[in-house]
Amino acid sequence: MAVRRFVGMCVEVLNGYRPAAHLRSLSQPREAANVVAQGLAGARRVSEARQARTAGRAPRPRRPAPAAVVRLRLCEPREGAVEAAAVLLLGERTHALALRLELHDGVWMASVLRFI
Image 1 (tube, rainbow, N blue to C red):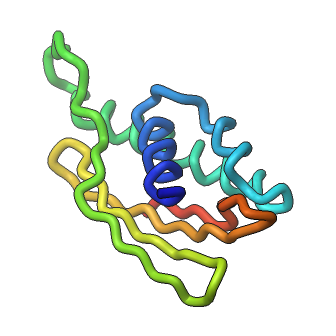
Image 2: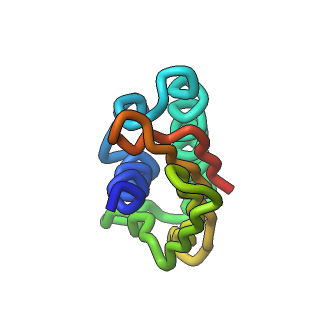
């Protein structure tokens, strides 16, 4: 449940519906800056990819298709830690999102986030 919530928030960041700083509240304090930076970098790459696809073409009147989760795979390497890989569909391209959540004081917090 926590993984789906975190991945959903990451997709909202990538789609531009939510600022990357919102990932801070779901991240471990010592890793929060890295998680937010990865979310921001991913959102920037998605935005640049969308602009590159429309460059040289007549402007489209509709919004670009939002990123969507196609598949989510989970792994529990040890108790209290979950690693996940999400396959995202963005237009005609696929991307991956890798993350690690760890349980601290009964709350799942992100320690690693990578947009590939």
